Image 1 (cartoon, rainbow, N blue to C red):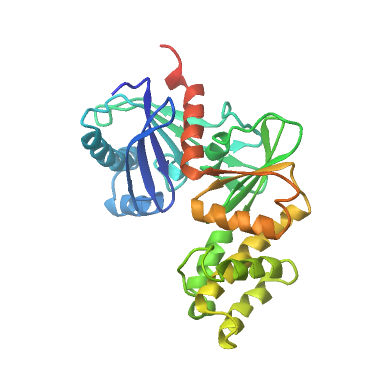
Image 2 (cartoon, rainbow, N blue to C red; image 1 turned 90 degrees about the vertical axis):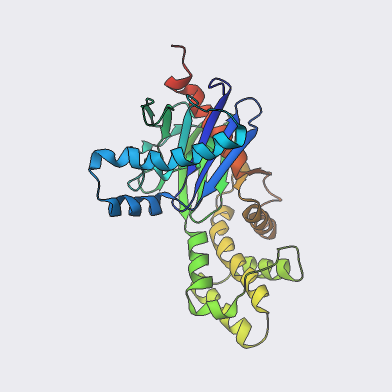
Length: 329
């Protein structure tokens, strides 16, 4: 496999691992492998292994090598020498090597992100480009900075917003080709805790899509309610909706989703950007688009949507192109 025309994309999060063989031209995925071997689980296994600290890198790369073997079988050829680009939590305290955060601002083309290049070894025959995260004075992110680079923001004096929904949603403000500020919202994690671990768990039921039945109606009800009362009070209405027979458990699930997403997005009403790029998993993109329309935000600024895979691959390739691995030797 030609190392100049392909790269290996490693998106290594806290709870999941994804490895893809990608053609640089067109970003076509030739093969992929994934597992639940996220950095949290891997760090726990590393602790249990009780090996010397200097073996940590080899321990983590052993997991990557296992999935590389799967990809080689899929494409029927050796991938020796193809560079691995890693983003996400691999550069964190629970990853294979902790790298310092890049301080704001950072260039939206990926030219100045903090990276570390690792040379191939006898045990791991691939150069590795490890990409670190970004910090402000009060906040941090790892992985989303690469996805922002993958959005291809135009240089403009108008303020643009990168909105990445997820467990810890990110709102990143972009101006004049620089990411200048960001905020994290624990939207996905709070929703999971409320719907699975709290007293509300008995009043909701996951299932169905936003477009089905009355789900969108109840989702929008939650979004609108989030603008007029405190979330801690609104959340209890999920229980009374169930007790009083006002909503089914599935309708309540979408109502609760609307409450937490609406609570997150209400901050945008006080500081509207000129445009929004919404990038992430398809189901979440659908929910956030619905919330932004229900709040009237979509009518005031254009919204562009992109998939998580698309922006991750493009962002990793952009950073790779700026790295020493892509420079003439």
